[in-house]
Image (cartoon, rainbow, N blue to C red; front, top):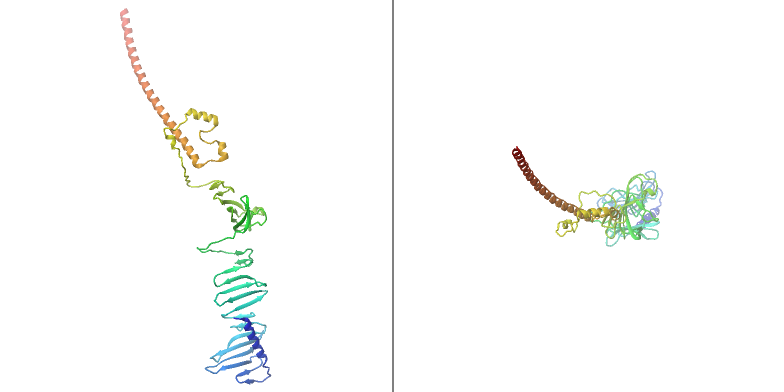
Length: 407
């Protein structure tokens, strides 16, 4: 519907009404009747077929304002309201009590543009290909937003608020938001951060109750509400990192600053509690787990091979006295400086256990030998004891015999 054409029609009707100025009489022009004053009308009978067809203009004063109604009848003796003009300047289509400059109760069909302008221009359009769109323009006729029937929607500048009338970001949603199972959330990383030892020209973040500090240092995030927990997931050309602050009620701005809890570098190292992970997983703190599996090549079974050079216990003692730790085991100072490799250390500890096993086996053999030797010695002693008893018995007999001979 073209409002320019409508405006011309209304103007013509007003001129037509003003042209019939009568005082207290009825003027008849064939089928055109003019009756003045309140409740009077100008009517056209277009056809007497059936119950009749025609149009009329009638004025009324319901109180508070006067009305000028355009009515029609279609094969009927009753008149129906088509258009209503109020004395305060409102126009109603499909309603006799319009509350706005244009109040339409029903559908509107248009073939071109509907323009409503107040400073800028808001356009509802339907083109020849039936691709409709709603466009908002500023005073320079620049399109600031557009919603099209082909599914495309764009906003050129400004903030969009859903559930809020005061959005402070390009898109602010107060309430739940959902992305369908095939949906993807994409961030255009055009911010700058400064972490990882260099400036990151392309960075973006997802914040929860938090915002970026726009001044140096650029890695400073803070909470927007001191009564709630807050967090940030940030990505850049250096990697990804997670920052967090719990819900304790802090007072100063510095206390609202988020702390980094985890980082994934662009070379694939993940750090928890550390900002400089030097391995695929670096944890600065305790780990609680039910099981740890370590893939390792080179277990300590070589200790049991015949060509293994097992140190003597004297060599072990000498090494301990000289160095303060076992052979092939790092010292306390080395562990404090470099840490330990879990798999390698388990293999070294197993090596010592297997060496102890060999020492125990050797001592068991020696013990059995000594036991065997002791048993043999006991048998010899017992034999000697028996022989000694025999000798003592014989000696007693000889002494008795000598005594007898001496008598």
